[in-house]
Image (cartoon, rainbow, N blue to C red):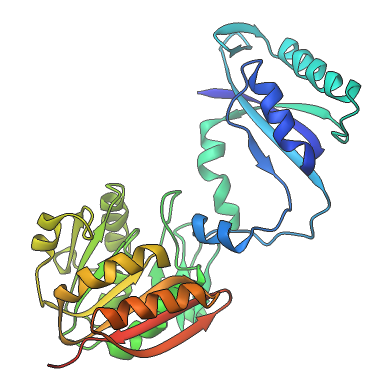
Length: 333
């Protein structure tokens, strides 16, 4: 399928009014490009791995609207098939009308460009390159392992657009904690496994077996691909789809007092209700590694309080960037 992209150069403060105005003529789903820094709350809600470095906010924004492009070169908008240039004229008319109301929309210029689906699918790859987590090399399939790194632990990962890569600080906090406690007999439960990075690295570090849980069925092919890409025995990684917090049958499938380590790289607001449930899956003396906690004291203390109320002992708190990881232990008796 081909698309025509209408790219409008404007100002950040005019984004909402332009999106709303163009919605009325049948344009939906604007892609917004600006340099406005994410707030701590937005970062927590998005929880993204692949986020390019941004420059200082200059007040400039680009709004991109994608409209299906027919074989005859026309576009379809609001059920009507028209020439691509005619739609551009309609957009320009709406922008000119906003200017007449003394709204400062900046330049207000419009560029047209045809694009294929493949451009959208692969565009994110320019932001993801190989990187290191201490002595671990994380590398995508489209890059070659440097000769100097061939003796390192190497994680081959193709994240796609659904799950993370290990680049996120919260993931790295978990990895560093896992290394402290894994041995050849370790049974691990990875709650919110996503692409399976934590579980796969745990097996590469010598863990015996991993069970992962996730709400998203897309985790199944993601984990399967990443296991194969890293030549990890698929028999050592079981994945269960469902909500371990609320679904008793998922808790039963995961099993009780089975795990030496439970790792949960989720958000603080999920960790709080998860903690009193997950205690039952842990062996006596088991380690509970949590991350995804925004380092604003309030979130950290909420997770620590949840651990304490569940009968766990806080072992360590580690920090990286704006995030922290809380590690706790289930008492031996």
